[in-house]
Image 1 (tube, rainbow, N blue to C red):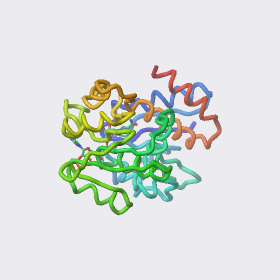
Image 2 (cartoon, rainbow, N blue to C red; image 1 turned 120 degrees about the vertical axis):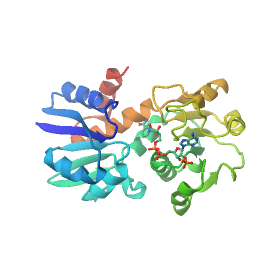
Image 3 (cartoon, rainbow, N blue to C red; image 1 turned 90 degrees about the vertical axis):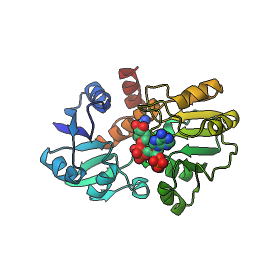
Length: 262
Ligand SMILES: NC(=O)c1ccc[n+]([C@@H]2O[C@H](COP(=O)([O-])OP(=O)(O)OC[C@H]3O[C@@H](n4cnc5c(N)ncnc54)[C@H](OP(=O)(O)O)[C@@H]3O)[C@@H](O)[C@H]2O)c1
């Protein structure tokens, strides 16, 4: 029996067990995926090995601790310095970041996107912006405060805080801040957001299953928009591929996960 889990704090709200167990059942794998409330990120490796897990997903606030806990980190996760998927390969913990490619997959149906503005400078912004830059998009970062922008400056991004920002035209605006998650805040000042939305074609909020104030603006300005549901599904699909060593077709995993949360 292969055991998997999601590590996080809080973790009770996570729909990862639902997504993964539905595919496990569909493919008749001898496996099970559960939740684990991990309070101390420094104990991640110890708990992983003690529970004899084959793999985990890692959510807030432990993605950086997961990066440090791995014996080897592969792909874009090395640059992001955050891991959300770990697989036990012959006793070694191998780390990946599937948030970044998950987001990219979720916007592949947006046509004609060249220039992207990322709102926010936290972990999700790092993952998304580095991946999109590698894929050839022109990516700029706007954050409320200056402190978190250093990471992006070092990686060669054009960055702004609220005071230094000058409005220009972007095809896609992505909200990666937590504004709107449990409040009614916009991620930037309203007059700035209005000016950005007037010029843009698309808007994505990585918060899922909620019409945030940011998405309501996108609707007002008649933009094509998405919440974070597709990103969530795609990051799970790619994680599942790693968990089962790419044994199953991405299309089939995706179909099953979409069906279970439709
Ligand atoms: N759909 C998915 O699969 C998926 C995956 C991962 C994360 N998420 C979502 O992504 C969001 C961000 O997660 P994270 O881990 O990147 O967070 P984080 O590292 O804590 O970063 C939070 C960012 O939001 C900004 N912020 C917070 N409140 C704000 C406000 N009221 N106005 C303007 N900016 C504000 C912060 O700016 P300052 O630097 O100025 O404080 C910071 O840049 C969460 O809502 C999470 O649920 C979704």
